[in-house]
Image 1 (cartoon, rainbow, N blue to C red):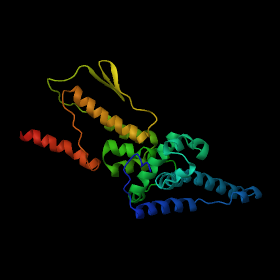
Image 2: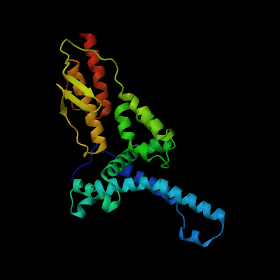
Image 3: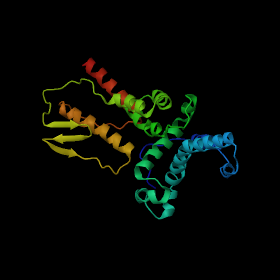
Image 4: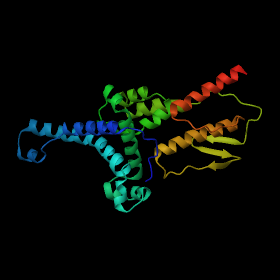
Amino acid sequence: MARTNKAFDATIDTIESAKETAVALMQNATVDALDLFYTDDLEYIENGIKKLNDYSNKSWLLSAILLYTLVYDKGLYAQSGLSWIDYQKEARERIGLDQRDISNQLSCARFFINNRAELERQGFTPEGKAKNLSRAEQALELSGDVHEVIKHVVNDTFLEFKEWYSSFKEKKALPTTENKREDIEINKDKFYINKVEAVKISDKIPESDKVRLEKYLNQIFDAMKRGFEPAIIECYDGKEARALPKLRDKYRQGK
């Protein structure tokens, strides 16, 4: 079975806890909708409308966890006779989601399952936070601080959150060598050598993978442009990867 586009190392207990939390949130939002049509009590109707809106605002999280843990990770999509790629292409007709929606929901579910306890500790509720949570993995890749990411997910509007994590894309002044390359140009997510686009990232891959590849290519082409030799080193996780430049700088200082 094709695996998720990011590492998913949650334990069974962690997954079960996330499911229970999502279900509990939905149970608190239940309402007898049919009964609302047979009353003239304004306050009763208004409370019913609020509960229905509450249900709608919370249901996306449960949907995301169902999609991730059962349809995708457990491989139940195979019952459709389709590969995962083809299932996503037909998802609009089957479950009312397009490929970008699926990518966002998978990202939401992963982050929620892996960080449920800290999200709850910081007061996370799903109302109005679908867009924030769908960008939490991207924010973590850029900032490297899960506690700060969750704080901003919980407290920020989407525009505030995006402005915060996008600030980590700003580059600091970096050294160059005598071998710097004037023929290399980096323009956001495009990379050129002698005015020719050297690499093109497909829009058909999941958004989280696209963000990671853009980040890696930026690092590679930036190093080449400044005359350095980029190195690819396998790391266990993001924390280990972020520690390597510190070791490199310490080595340079000792030379």
